[in-house]
Amino acid sequence: MSDITETTMAKVKSANIKKPVRRLRRLSLVVMVSIPVIAILIFISLWQLWITDSEPQNVLAKAMAAAESITSFRATSRSSLVFPPDEFRLESECEFVFPDRVHLKITMEGQLNEYIIIGDMCYFLASNKIVLASMAPFFEVPSKLTTQKELESAIELQQLPDEAIDGQICFHYKGIDETDMETMVELWIGRDDYLVREIIRTAQGDTSEPRITRYYDFNEPIIVEAPKTESGDLLLGWKVVHIE
Image 1: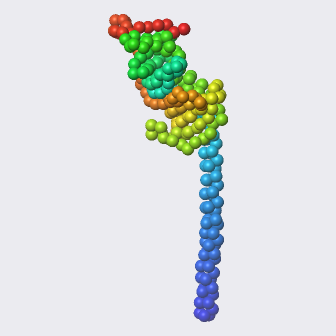
Image 2: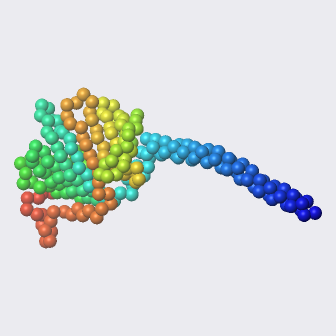
Image 3: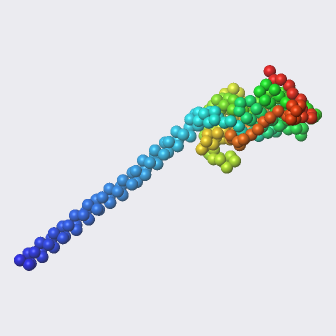
């Protein structure tokens, strides 16, 4: 009887050990096969999501929406102004406070011209040799409206490799200006916030420099006030005109 018991128990122990091992091996095989499949599916899903989010029209739509939330910003711009046969190099600095306050400094041929626009009033510093007060509205002061117009007019966009602007990784696109088919447009739009960081406009076949506009300091506490003394008088050298 002892021999039978020992033999039986040995078989039982052998059966109890081997079956879980077989199940474990089958389970390990399933897991090993499943993990790569799941990883591939996750990768494909993320890739498709990235492709969809980076499509120019989707990014432009989000950039348009992001512009609506801007209350203030600063911008710098470089371009040239052509009065045949002469061409003048322009550099500008701009502070914009929603909805209609602008502080604009334009350097033209080494001469600084300063403007403060509040509503329909344009204050300008008249101490410079070159007075451009009557031309101030012509300069397309970078505002939310002008930026949105540039986004709307950009067509046939091609996506280029991402680039960093002021430390922000940006979508980078190149296309054509629908309102002027001879002008190429490049856009840099923040990946995280969809705010426009830079726009370059280049006229094909034109010898003038491209217009480069860079935007920064979004929604910072910027103050633009009329150049007046505490008593309400204009500061020395400043004049004011009404913009129609």
